[in-house]
Length: 451
Image 1 (cartoon, rainbow, N blue to C red):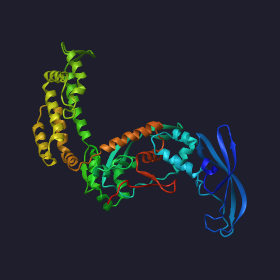
Image 2 (tube, rainbow, N blue to C red):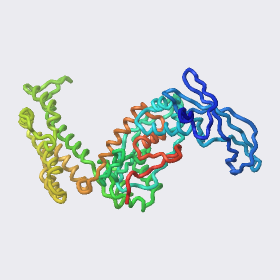
Image 3 (cartoon, rainbow, N blue to C red):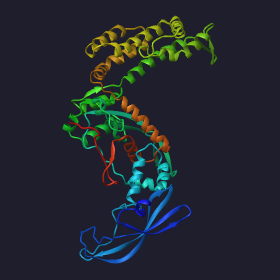
Image 4 (cartoon, rainbow, N blue to C red):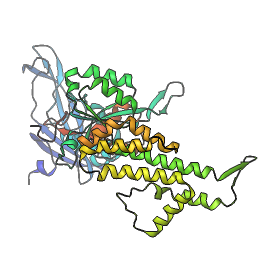
């Protein structure tokens, strides 16, 4: 059996000795030295000394291994430069082999902590941190046709010079997602249809405007056809200014969440009418304590979507009837929300949905229930973007799912002190990363044919 394959040694090396240590294995190897000057590329070099080098290598049977070899120190007679020879299987900066470096980078693309990566690769967590620092990921060269934008809490650490310790600072970061595959209905070989293409260290409008204007020309920004975001007014104003040809789309999740909040506020307003305070002590209106508890336990029943979960049980029907008997406002808000759910699911062709939505808004915008009136006015303000979501079948729902993966990455590491490290881990885990023939360089590649 070939010992190089057995011990997974680099090509072009010769194994001279194997030394077993209590917790590791040492391979003494030899290789052919190259006398090529890195400055002038000349080969008129003479040996000026030697250096014994130890480099971590791929673990064997869950045991850490390292290579021991001698490197020559050369003097170039042409440019008078001294240098040590560095074989191509050795990392140019770190004292690890390129196969081990490649394995560590591949491990970093999974949702696991740096300590787990270090244990799998047989190296120290500090070495994994140095590997992450060695990776450089630039901003994307161009923007996708369907661009998604969302924010999340970064909790980046700040170094306090006076106290000499890291302090937690809650800071909202911005994620940019490529939703082109999601809009086209294409799924890549990994089963994904969206990914994070960049992470920005702030969500303020001035910062985002400066980022897009400095990194992308007007022609590149005109190529964005769909801009998907949540109901953040700043994102919408930014899209109107920087992406003139983009159709702004909403995620229906935020609309439904706003409606559920309206019915919950109505329920809590009715519950508060059953409570009186005397000398700072809470007491119930006589005969209303049971109704208060009943409304509190009916919160999930009131926000159920009948188009997804039709009323089939007598118990649920009786619970709803009792809620409606306690307040007509609850019945009005509940029926209005169910009408909207039926509108976005069973309205028939997409062309008639705008007219039906206008009828729904006109029938409820003058309601006597303040919670319902507020949510109807909100939907009336965002109506063009809701209709774009129905028409173009594009939303930032995948951005919310990617935010969940980002939270998992943060949770596994118990937070990050440095934003650049957090950004690299997010792009390695949730981005379209692919290793090139040089394992220490990372590039992006679209997972589908754009033709």
